[in-house]
Length: 322
Image (cartoon, rainbow, N blue to C red; front, top):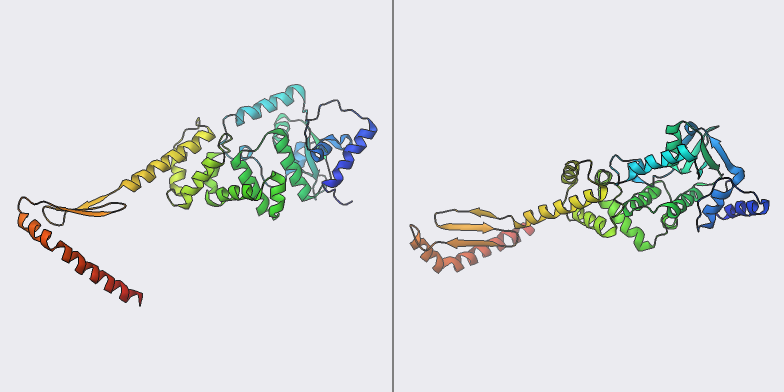
């Protein structure tokens, strides 16, 4: 049997409405009709051994796959696990049959799957026969209906969808993005090293301005991956994801300011000092002391010395160009 498209999923909801069947457990409400259809197909709900279910598709959340998470990720998962243990799994996960006989692929609900696996119980699963694009759309809709992805999670999810071979329009549809919105996300993933992003984490309270600022630091080479990783590794584990990003931005700004203010100073002869800064070269000559007479001579001849030096410079550079 051919796998259902997203448009065809609405028929599931209609069939349920006609049957008048009611679920003993509440299904999370959503304004997305397609997602509601996926969640509401009672005949497709089964209890499956978690060990028979494999992950599928691009990762959409950093908190499941990185060591550094946002403030309440650990506590949030523990709360979910305790809730399932005490009151049962209220909302099923979405799966489809895998190519291997007797196995399934988890489209969304990986945290619920993990919780059931750790509790040693079967996971309530909505088994649907859907294609890859419909699965991606369902994944995006489920995120929108439950907890919005952070800006950086969206960026990484979009990148993962593209790397999986899907087209740009699919990414925009899954994440409800405009062309410019996707461009902003791609600017971050294309310029912020993955290792740096993993150490920062999801940063749920940090939006586009901060992540774009970080991307700009890498683009302008004011920040390198090595330096960024060093700064982040010096942050204690108690530092939240958002604060890690803030620390990194502040440290990069400090380093940039220090680099911009650095000057070199040399004294080729006594009484003469040459200073080189970011925007200028200056020379000072003392008109007193052992080289007072040299200072007077230099005062009279400096203009001609500079002219001759400039003429020599332009002649040499013109020759090099030819």
